[in-house]
Image (cartoon, rainbow, N blue to C red; front, side, top):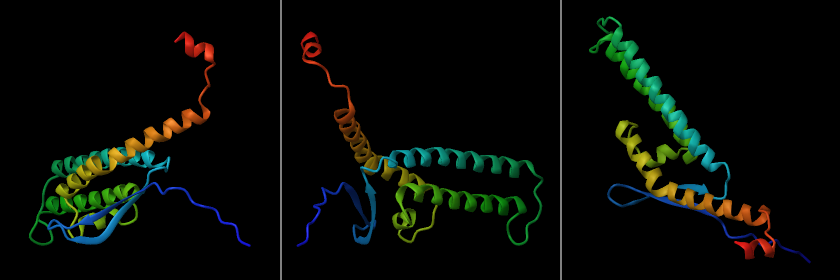
Length: 162
């Protein structure tokens, strides 16, 4: 005879991805809403995103202060260095966003497009409008459950006095 363990309700947020034309790409992002570290990963994303932006700004200032010379091909040396700095920035950003969105999350959202400043803004907007409300609600529910389980129980006298 076998006994089984019945698993509880799955609290996974699964967001399908569609093209601009509304066609399903077959890709999705998945978030385990009960994962207590999910808000920490989002916080880390915000912090590292700011750090990356400061790094890029500093790189641009350094490049602008240098004397510009002819580059190897069409662009000047400073222009080439700015493009290289932007590419490095986008690689860092993709890593940071994937930490929160999951493996290849950025690639899934871009659906074949190249990373750019507007795509980062699109991803930020998507996170803010479609993921964070679920995350906020989940954190409220987790906090409520923790308080219910481990909170201080009031005596009947205290309840009457209030």
